[in-house]
Length: 198
Image (cartoon, rainbow, N blue to C red):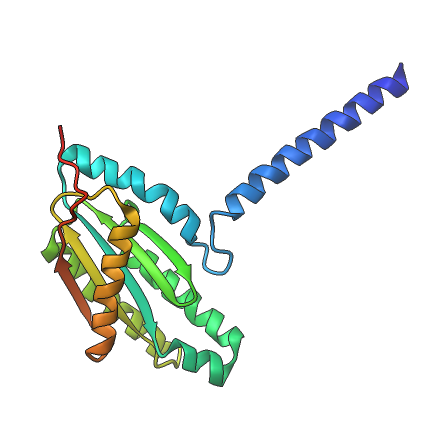
């Protein structure tokens, strides 16, 4: 009986450890390991919930796409370890400027996405300009010439299609890159897939 009891406890412990490992694995699959931000998967999972809340409350929403200017040059000339440090500085800076209610994600490489619920065009422009300056200042302090191009779309009615919103912000960001980088542009955007609040 003693042996059976020990075997039962051992199996119970192994099952418990396996469950804990699965929970940790699930959490890590939603977090960018380098920056600690949401990864693309988690961002795509959480964004529809934020959009639904904004639809219900008939409140505006802003989606931004952020690309670090000249990041590739850092990786190519100073190495990937320095590049990783730059990404961490950028992530920390964004977290310090944005509200806890905002969704911030590293989509991959040097590209980030931000979703600002209940935010007007004017407030978004002010926030992103403050963020752009903070990134520039933080990078300068770290001895780096990396800056940020920020393109955003502001919707008075939240759309239902997450990818459409991200794509629209991405196009605005590329317009910023083409016009000289290290700038902010917030464009008004109304989707064909808007859902009015009932």
